[in-house]
Length: 237
Image (tube, rainbow, N blue to C red; front, side):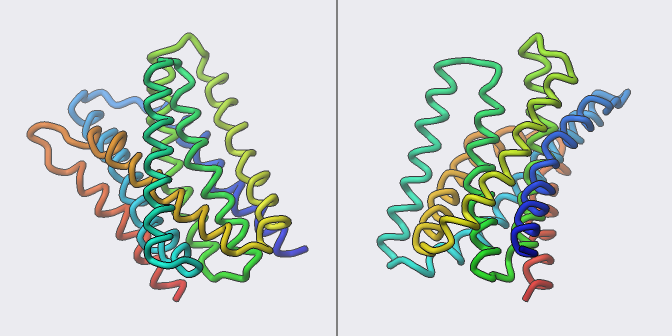
């Protein structure tokens, strides 16, 4: 029962970073346009670094344990292809909800992996939850700004949507904890599939938004995000 509570609390903690990021974007006011741009690009890069650390330190190492090299590569590539097709579809639909869908596409597989990791007694659960939260905070920040500028939704309505997305984490985590943990190969497959999709998202959506002409600090956000993940990984081992 304690493990089930851990699943709920950790996935909720990771998910609530999205509405927290949205609230930060709502209340954030910086007079200097250049400083504001640098901060936004730095926050975006930090999220990208956190995502890369989750892939490199948790999702891929855990995912490949159940598969041969070729099977691992196929699952990884399928994840990238699936996220690419989703990205193409969202681009065609041009809906203001596309950012919410994109965040959900990341968050649900990650929450499944987190719930399964706790069920299997893995030591990576807290680290994975922290990395997911580190990713969700800047995603919530940037998605709020994009939704606010491209839709007529009020700030409170957007934050409410993000809160609903956060609740999808505990639901996914509990499903994995109760039903999917009996099939570790399935969970490893989810981790590899999610890794390929997340890596696609990093270079398609996140990395291009980091570059700012004649400013060199924002990319350091990616280094800091990965470094924080590395510290967490080493402390958990």
